[in-house]
Length: 202
Image 1 (cartoon, one colour):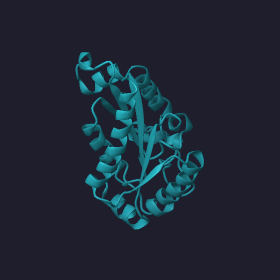
Image 2: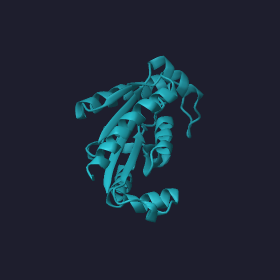
Image 3: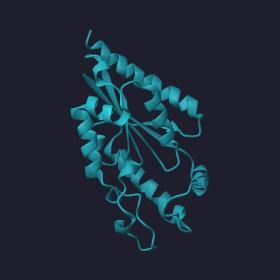
Image 4: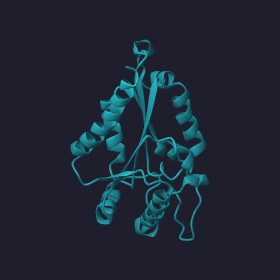
């Protein structure tokens, strides 16, 4: 049984969730874990000197719980995917390739997780597009006035710098391209890797 772990990172509203879900639908024996599912309760997220909640840091996330789920998949992808998707594990062939898709805005900034990726993709969009898209999103709690320019964008630049210092093996994707085009590009590369892994059994 072979395993492949693909990271889909990106800035806020860059399209990473859409791409990840589409990949998950297209790739057999795949499982999707989203970093946004591991945010800590609002009450314990720290506040900066401007009064802005510091959501764009690793400290705002239960990374231990996220890593626990990732490692559970690594140990037994059949059971994890059966639980998530409800498919019959007995239908899986001995030479199957199992794919874990991990999506999130700080997945490449957390070294224990970053070290596990076989493929890394990062979606980026310009400042003005990002700000506009963010303004249309409804968050809980909602963004306070000045949050994007006073916190979100500066933290993106800081986190990106730290990410690039941690790893250079990232494929940057233009988030302005059509969704189908982005999906086709990543799916082709991941499919090639899946086929390469399958070939090692022959």
